[in-house]
Length: 231
Length: 231
DNA sequence: CGGGCTTTTGAGCCAAATCAAAAATAGTGG
DNA sequence: CCACTATTTTTGATTTGGCTCAAAAGCCCG
Image (cartoon, rainbow over all chains, first blue to last red; front, side):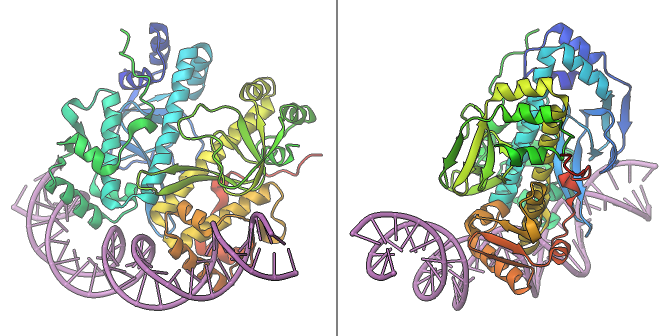
């Protein structure tokens, strides 16, 4: 079942039952993948499109000196061509040409997929702003705000509580900081009663304050055209 | 004349004379724009696509505290929807629907435009790596290597000398550094005889050494399918 | 109940920021 | 072509955010 994906795409365009069915028909076998697995290595030919159903995956680059930069997080309902898993994840893969065929014959689906690409690119740009012009504590806070907003999109953030199974090292490689510094920042956010985070569960205790602190403005996520899922 | 654009797209797919003509037919009036002009402000509806013919433009974001993060540079031959100019520039704009129509009826053109989008996204990802995991001096050096490679693509980098009219402040807002620090790095690169840069002209004196220093690997620019321009 | 991750703490250091002012360049109008 | 301004580049001094190194403590899981 591709429901998280469908749920996400609903925000990009109003899908008909036929659109949803066309998408669901593409679902291949589900696949459980352990943590820290590369699904497609850099340079390899892109095959099927992976959809994350549970867990977290990411896209990243390694540097010659062993450094790692994470380029994107993939939460449930999000998809990509080349990813590694951050945690044990449940994935599905959609055959590329099947997806293209479905898009060709379903305009709303095409619009929604195009919208999803736009959002991906906008997130990447915002991450650049994050690394370039925000200092460590705001940077981490901003990432928390964003992932919360994204998971809310797919209905996985009841009461501002989300499953967030990344390690502090993953967070460091996302934010361009050292793990030690990330640790100190996380403690600071905890002490300020903005978040609680342990055992893979992140609770945002005071979303408004966290967003103010981070300078978070969700407009880049293009959530504007919010419309109730039309059942 | 859209020759820099066409020259760039040739690297993405082999264009026929008809493809080139279709693109040229879209050219609107040329437009000279002074430095530091916003062509499309954030949030505005994207209208025509701008092509840079001469000069430099960029895409950027402002922060509430007045900080600025440059998200992309647009060298001659490159195009975008929302840009501000870094310097006095010569632009042309292509009507959006005309471009879409041309893409629809010219497969090679469509492939080339799609390739250009891929390259744009890849550059953005590499910039994220740059900000996240390279220190100041390598970061600046990497930007120099990249812009040199991109201008070579459109034939504007004879003997590793390019027009590079950005200020050190622009460079700082690209690299996520302070102008003062950028200045010191530039001097260091000059002292090391890697570059010379004055009066808007950047000379890369020792490309191999600069690339080694920066850890520059041009594969992300997708220059692979290099083929002589088929006249 | 170990053994391997992950998180936490402490100490010292370095890259890069800030602040402030001077020098050099580039532009502009007379 | 020169004076006058505005912008850009450069220098110096100081502060600080964030890194490194190293070790301890806490967790998770078989």
